[in-house]
Length: 476
Image (cartoon, rainbow, N blue to C red; front, side):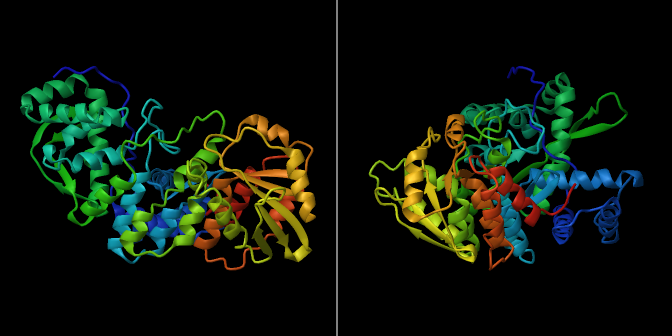
């Protein structure tokens, strides 16, 4: 089998291979919620891990670097993301902590986290040419009977970690089958021809990632023979190239099949470089992955949270409905969302000549209008005259337009008006974090202050900062 030499491969995080250590670090991080961690506190965190026998720093002077590497690994595996120097836990991250004493549920939640990992990754270093869900692809291969439902370490390193998109799946299976029948001597020649790329690929998968997944209970790993060794760069270090192999852990097999049916490995990842969206808005959508199939699997009754988290997706679904049977469901979800504020009363109107939702900010006896702009693509324009008329009809002070995304011209339409835009995933993130942190009385006051001070603009960034300040763990 001939193959073009590729310099670019997947970058898989390799700082921690022990799932218990990763979880313990995440628990400590959670305990520092709403604080700014000093260097001294970071050192104390590392010391605590040492005392538990979970961590041994080879260079004591690099403790702070090691702490930051662990934070980055949590980001890579979808426990949460960083923004403006703060780390905020994702919905799945918070769900993981809710079940921190239940290993079986944690195993399923972590599997769902892996399902959310995409390339390009917000906190990963893989080249932008890679456009796929890497672990969905690996799990798909591990369910393929033609491969005996297993993958050898050398196959992952030589083939899988160079796949650019999932459309090449059938060719990949055939390449794996061909590679699998080669002798150790033939494989050694192939690997030495691409030593630099393949020694790193082998090391990341066989020494770190597969061990991490095994300790998490997601994969079962089996030792095979050492075929040969490859030199690491120009150093005196040599890495073993083995016939170690992995299979899915029996306890997650059925769940993986359910995830694949609901969220295919062929799905196109979100575009981090979308020229019409802020990168942070795309990141929020990536980290909002919260599949209902997981909640069913672990017996988590959480329908309200699912509705809020899927707000952006629901908009698109309802907007594309050809029979127009679900055209008002997005408005229903927004009414539910605004009524989560303890001092807001929201009521759906959505009749000709009226705003979609009429709201009363009870504390100040101030009315405002909410317009739900669901659109299959991007919101192209905002009719200010119509919104002003709708607001006048209820005696409102301002209008909030909630939409998944819009073209720049729509933002220009609202300049000089009493209208603001909030992106749906930003609104959803704020409400979700209130639910996750068990805040029963959500005060609308801070929202009102932000809206009133920023008429004629998109206030998503300010609302996002509000979420980060309230729920972000610390400055890192």
